[in-house]
Image (cartoon, rainbow, N blue to C red; front, side, top):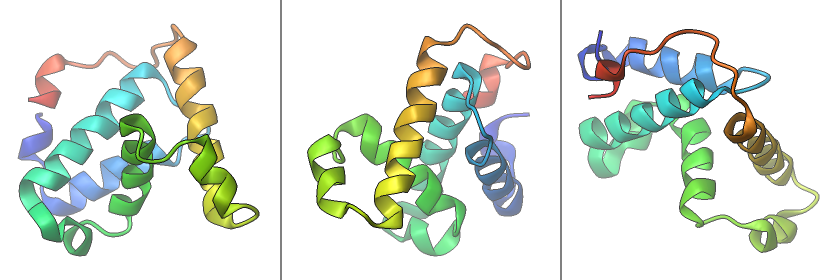
Length: 112
């Protein structure tokens, strides 16, 4: 099944379930990125209203990957929970990028 074929609840569920894993794999990163693209495609400027709460979770990853949020910015947020959230995302992102673990085979067609 393709990400674009999922209904709203399935898409939100997939994004949230993947985001909440203790550790991410490279496949998980691909899923989260695909969910982000689908959120933007379906919701446009109003995506936050349609895809809560998963939207905010995946948004944090997107902000880090695009450089919108960096270490300097995170320091300005200390000691808030959001700073801890961003640091946790960075940790999971770095571990996934350096890992060769693949938990499940992912069909590339899922991300079309």
